[in-house]
Image (cartoon, rainbow, N blue to C red; front, side, top):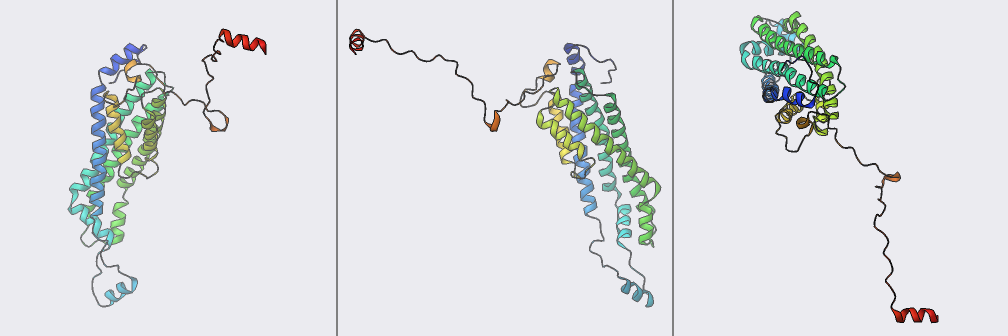
Length: 299
């Protein structure tokens, strides 16, 4: 997969790709499963956090409790962080699966990058750098945030206050992991858009898949796909394209050359379809009989 010399002929392109197409397709499917599984597990885990149904302590309640010598109940942030520390498994599995999915995206996008370049796609090396930086940063940031959140929950004191809990989830490692994850999201979003656009132009991706890939890239920056459904679907579908199991023919994967999708037929002014000129000769009148010719001469 790490072929440094770019192929120069369509035959060489197909030979190089054949050695890794099956492996890359499997990686795309695993990345889709990890991305979707991590999002689902994290969503369910955070949806089960306690504290949302607890009593809201107002200032009047707090002053009354203090005056009577009663201990204030723990705040929502404390309850939730302690719960994460007491039930660490789902809060570790979710982010780690997302991190694995993000790391595997590198192999899928890098394969599409080389395939697009081999077919004449104008992809600069900056796209490959964005893929590498984005995948690694997103994976590292996701893992650091997930692991450190659990660690802070385990280390939180039993008599901690809300301020202590908020300080814990704003610790240096969590903030650093969040920044690294954000950098990875921006880089991966940029890479998805570039790869989706140029792979579609050379015919490696259908128009639907190219546009969907660019939308998936935008969701790394705009939080419209927090469950990772669009990204997971795109990765799984790209796996079928790379494996040669797409329902309709995609010629660029078989010829090793750019096979742009045919454009729409030009329309006439006013939006009407152009009417082709008739190419059949006008019918000739039938020959007159001898009696018809005599009547015509008399007239």
